[in-house]
Image 1 (cartoon, rainbow, N blue to C red):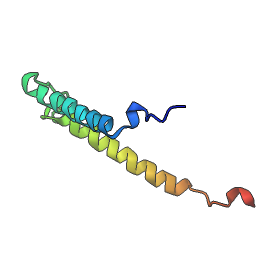
Image 2: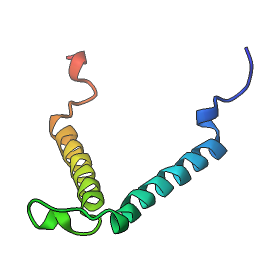
Image 3: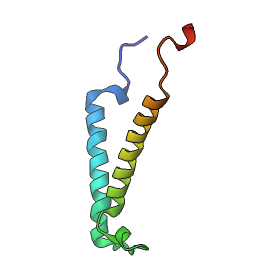
Length: 81
């Protein structure tokens, strides 16, 4: 067996993937300057609305999952009884 680390676990690869993610996100938001978005409800036509809505929705799901996990959490000795 070799001692090589999988390429997705290398710190340099992780850093490159983060940079690539931020570049792609910035390009999609910047594309709205050249490609106008016609909103259906008024606010969804604002600049970078989709990016902000996606981020806030994701953050809300994380917090809801944390709250649900705390609500449904069992004690460590649940099955020992």
